[in-house]
Image 1: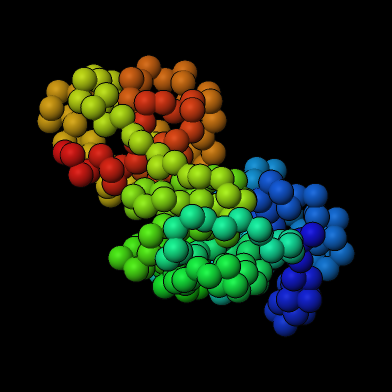
Image 2 (image 1 turned 90 degrees about the vertical axis):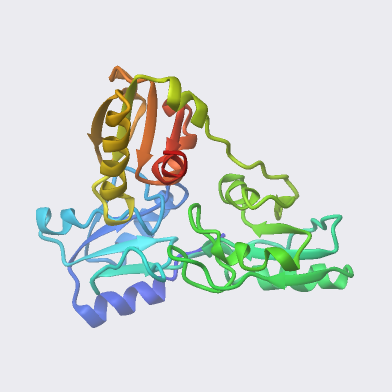
Length: 289
């Protein structure tokens, strides 16, 4: 069951007298659009899913003469990017039973994604009843908001307790978030008991490629233009041909470009998309240039 935080939405609309609102929803919440239409006077729902707090199309406020943007299922970033007051985040929650998974290691680092903020505490109690020592995550680095919370690109809450734990359990479904934590090098599971695998990027392929494409986005949290330009300059000094590609949404049509290796100066997790293989995030590339 999903708690849409309808009462919070009503208060924000009433307190600000909002009429036209651009609504950003992750794919799994799009089915709830009718319910949201009942409390938002004139909602404009985006056709493409929203992938995070970084994924806010600020330029559409002026284009559609909207009063605000509502981002559901994410939280306001602790540091970056910064947004004006008419961008609101609703930390909707997934209501579910406590997971029965108990990892084999004793000192467990427990962290969560925002949709399970209100339910992961019960899981902590369950693990402690099983004789485990549970260390809760600390403050995130930049994109997440609350102590213990991670996002796909910000695992600072886990990194800060790494010396205190034998491994991690992430209160999340699937592998997207737990794989990010696995990069820290310790055994990592989601709370369904599925083991995570750290993503690996084929940096060596970059150095033997002649035609390079660098992708950057237009949204505030998905545009690393400074880093992209720095990489472009360094690669061109090595005799490589480099093109810059800009877009809100990157699809498999990107393969129509004559490119041997992609560098993503946008969401760092985009480099894991199959149709961008081989590729690597711009910050990862900067380490090797």
